Length: 276
Image (cartoon, rainbow, N blue to C red; front, side, top):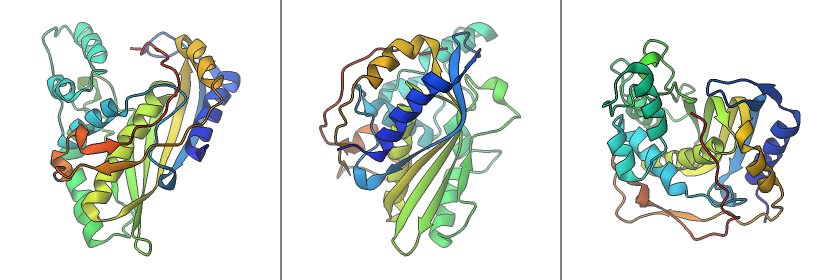
């Protein structure tokens, strides 16, 4: 069964490869890029995992659990099973002459939980309970004042929720200034899926739609061969079901293993190198 989510993802990947502008980038790798794209997932189809290649959504859950907690030390991320921040940290440390630094700086969770004294995530939940139809149910990670201190400026820089009081459902939209379609986007959807389900659980609501809105949407040059393999896999598989562990605590104390994804079929393992 082909989900609209995966169909949109594959279509976007193909479009970027064939029609994207060839651009230089921060990493020196080069990209094929589009601007202003949207991918939408319907939760009725299952959990948003790309099935065209083998992926482990647990690493994305671990990253999001750290964001929710406001963690910035790489040891916290790696202890939970998210290992992809190490290369960016080492690059930042080398450029800034701080070889022993383990702090990622004012990245996502740090801003979500303390934006100049405001715990944005807690404020969002409090406001959603009091006024579910409020329009500024929004959290931002974009703060120009201290970006140089962060290992990487925020790629996904805001998210907003929309509550339908009639159906008791919740939509979440996250916005990105820059997204790597091959490696980044699947992880971002898995991570924000974790966040959306956590918010729904906290508020007693059902998830309805998860929407990603993307500015610079690109495929790296060194990902093209693997991307062609993805496009050559025409089999669409059913998305997995999900459930929370009976041991799951409140949103601020979740563990990546608290969200259980059913066993599901995926495509071949295709290795890609992250551009740093």
